[in-house]
Length: 276
Image (tube, rainbow, N blue to C red; front, side, top):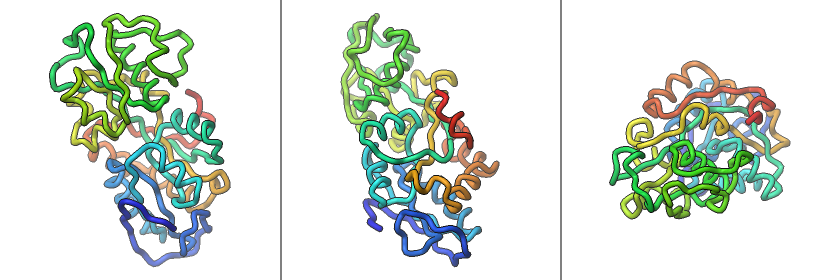
């Protein structure tokens, strides 16, 4: 199995569980694709899984595209980095045969600035950076609407760009940048809309540092997931990892690790997960 950027391995002696389809030499060794902010959590999960005879290898990615492509190509066995809405849009766009197997948490998106202490201080004509990917940008626009800056169509589905804005009350200039770069441009813009995980990787604490952040209702459509190839959705090893993830100690670890910036949202029913 190919490795890229960084790999963290928890080595254990293994017992007999069902084989997984990602191509690892040992049937009880699986590889999860994550972004940087997810590594400490998956190190914790690897320790938990090791007690059950499962080895979890961690492969880090620095963007929002490669983790799903690597999953489709069998380079990883499952991934844990994306919302269900982003996932559904991505697999349709790229015609990938992938499936979610569990909901994990909600990671509220926030607006950040080093020029203004409140979103109410942002002046007319300000430049706001947003992630350029359609689902992330659509979510950013919903956040700006929630903050009172813009209005979107009533039937806006959360996927789109600035052309969907029907009222721009503050005459904002919307600047598209790669999601991973949204923290870097903060000094160059009036404010930047940043995904939660990207903010954490940039040493920001969303609940403390964002000048405006999604409320529970705004974030509800963006439950993060564990995803795998469709043929492996019922794999016993992966299902057991999902069960371990949904245990109370994992919830407590997430809350402590991310300083209350992530909201554990443990969903097993895939119909419920997609009801957004």
